[in-house]
Image (tube, rainbow, N blue to C red; front, side, top):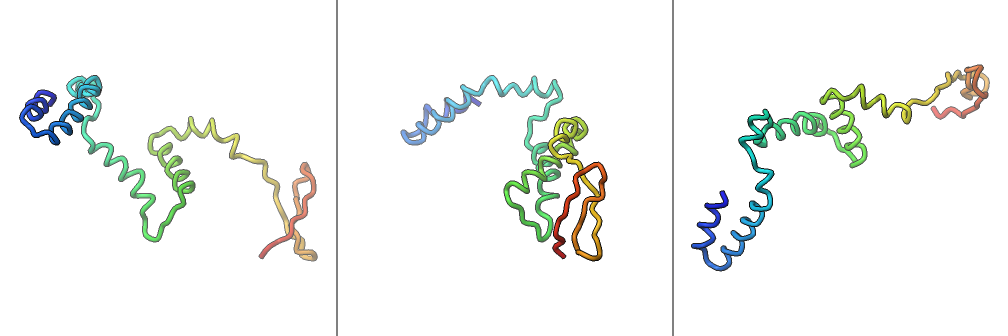
Length: 133
């Protein structure tokens, strides 16, 4: 690739020569990351097809269903959870995350006379909340 770009650069006009020199600099600087034969021997993908398929499976099938619209934060949350599940890392991730999500819950019962929910857990403080129905 670099040899071909050099050949084209040496025969190009001034404007094109500058663009080719920029490309040459990029390829020279990234040469150590372009050992594709080694990557193939290691069983690593070198084409974009695997990544494109992952994006389709992870993102498109979940986020672009009919009638869906997402705010950035909500969409990111769904994609994070979906990626943990699809990569089979949910169990280990949940072990780290659950303390921030699990909260003690008290059972609430409605009294017919006041329309107020009261905490029925005898171990918790009694709590009165107005019902919004």
